Amino acid sequence: MAREIFLVKDGVQKVSFLGFSWTTLFIVFSLVVALGSFMFIFNIVAIILQIVAAIYYNKYYTSQLIARGFRPSNETTEIELEKEGISYN
Image (cartoon, rainbow, N blue to C red; front, side, top):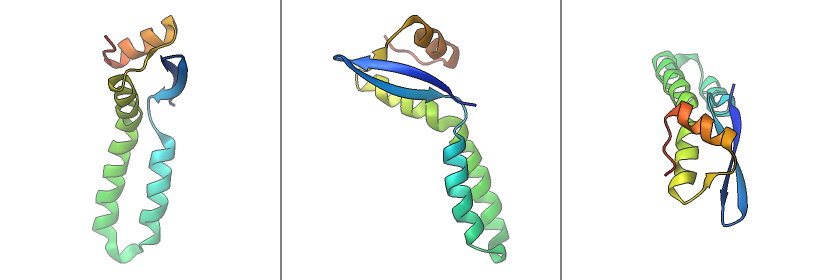
């Protein structure tokens, strides 16, 4: 389950998430299923890639916000970022 964190830059606060992205997993998974069973191998590879994307997407998005200058808005967010190994200095 993803954890909600808050980042701030120039008084603007953004919500970001850390952890597994269920939304990323289910959106593309539903598209793969619609392709049909005749593409079984493609489906298996696509599902594996989608699971990997769901695992890393939130961390990537948060890292990109920090690279654009957003910073943790509170101590709880700082702790969550440190747990994930994301540097914000």
